[in-house]
Image (cartoon, rainbow, N blue to C red; front, side):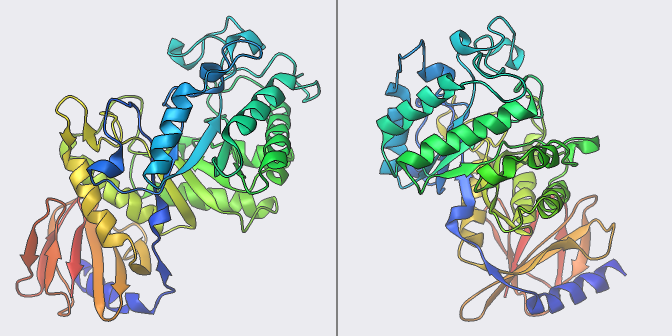
Length: 407
């Protein structure tokens, strides 16, 4: 029964609504300037996000009226030289400006007080907010119009170790960032605070609707969320919950970005053998939603993403796999979004095409390794180790890691 339905699904897929996959979808974080820039070692991407690069508000604005732009300038110069746009995350209050300057944030891994709002902003959102206004003014004066494509407001505001302020305060901060930044550069896009997801398995979105209800939506151009999940396909549910919140509060039509994500979570990577398959399934799942840009975390993090081995100074198996599926996907048209063949099935598939006559399909099984028949038009398949296999007797073996069928 499973095999027959897989064949039917692959055959009818070409009749679905099509969408071409843009290189803009693929974006990244980098951690260390001691590692090569990703695109110089063949890892192509369109946009760079500043989180984890030591260029927060606290890193730069070291005391009132004092700014150290050197590290941010270095990173922006590298990104622009290599053709990437910039997402600057406005985040982390300097200790001297914090409403709680002695409070521990981010498990003590950053300076005290950074996860709290500035001390000139009241809990109801009133106050001068001059510390923020001064910093954004200095940032825009220093960088000039056109340098920053996106300014993201904060980081994971639903996580108490990242944000200890009120909803009224973060909405006010969003409004002030927007007002100042757009006065210097009307084309800069403001990205909403990115929720990680709430509730069982981190799939519900409870913080985002509250942000919209408090008026935050009117100040943002892009809706952001984070994409850490236990199972790659779970991201579809989280995005569906995001679009539902957007529809409820009149935000439909704005771009949706996943501004950070990988496998889940808390500094404990999944088994190395599963990592390439997880990431490919994660990308395929996001491409099956309205998400238009995804910032993988991170190029040179051994815990998540893991495209580059800093100790060995080489591309990892994850990085080599990324290079393969980037080439397979970019410029292709997704003719059928990824989905199980019936509700609850462990077999997933999605289909693709290129002009003039190329057809492909990704197929995998989330629970088992099984052999299934495929339509006769598929004559070979590729795997994430870089091998090409001739399909024998119209049957292939599938498992945790997707394979790429081709006509």
